[in-house]
Length: 272
Image 1 (spheres, one colour):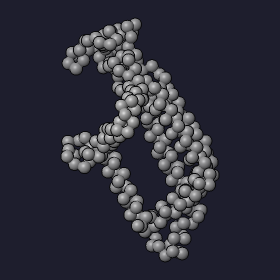
Image 2 (tube, rainbow, N blue to C red):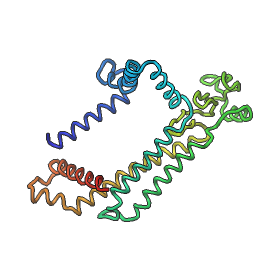
Image 3 (tube, one colour):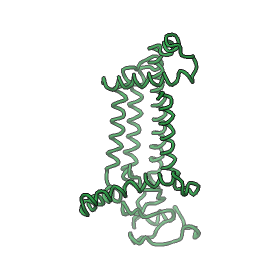
Image 4 (cartoon, rainbow, N blue to C red):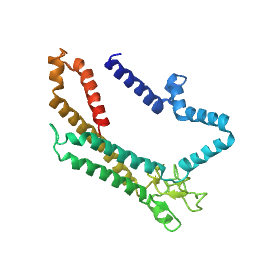
């Protein structure tokens, strides 16, 4: 099969999985394969896994898995924090090992060796700041301050007491069942931060998200320039058009350029 058809099939399958995962519960997809794929990705696969474990290893194995699930999903724990740091560290390591040998290159100066490390460092800084900042814990000592800052409108927010903390609930506050505390202007509990996102750390969380968006865009552009520089230095387009007689158009050249790029990147990866 031609490489362009493989790329098209890969793109369509990726699109199907992403749409099913994000939108499969929408009413418009009710009774369609997209809804069934969504169920399988979100609940079905795990349910089938539990049934398989129960049939092979018995009830004790299921209870062990449910205990792990409770620890990972329903109690404060650093699992996702460790995964985030591992993703950042491993990704930066492989990018540095595979791409830094081409920086400086045809389009990028050596300055980007240091800006990439600085960008990752700032991202980790925002991560730690959000993780360890107080989200706005409501206590008996400060509940009156939060009540003054967020008065009740008696429409959506009415005066009531938290049944767990036994203190008044300021408007827009919520009790987090994972952290077991009330949080002012509660947004959500973020497993990646192992912390609630609330009144006092929302700005850090937004800075974390926006910075990582910028970091991803910067990485895509920088790696694109690295790849373009390598193609220029290796004279790939010239060789394909002159020696292989391929038409000098994007539609004809793109699959072959992608194939050459993948082959070159794989050889660099295995030679690291």
